[in-house]
Length: 102
Image 1 (cartoon, rainbow, N blue to C red):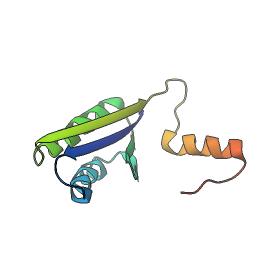
Image 2 (image 1 turned 135 degrees about the horizontal axis):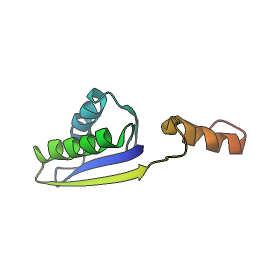
Image 3 (image 1 turned 135 degrees about the vertical axis):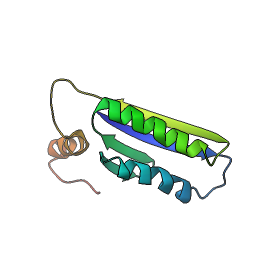
Image 4 (image 1 turned 180 degrees about the vertical axis):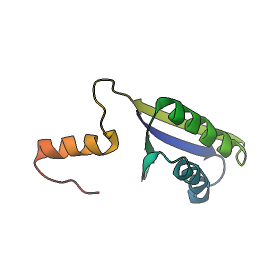
């Protein structure tokens, strides 16, 4: 399973890097494969571990913010056992016949 997670404190100002860093630290310490991007973090692993991680990240943000907005996008395949974080990008690059900006 892969999931894109975005945990946002509402009403905590404009610069949110310190809040995001607390969440990325939790994701990093989870031991799951992940890729940070400008709008969230994509995490890959067992569905139970990912759902536990989402809850942990959301609750951590609630410790320092009065309101938290969490979005999650999930993609899970049963037909293949592949590293989806890498495979999805590589499949598009193959169709285009070239590497994309990273």
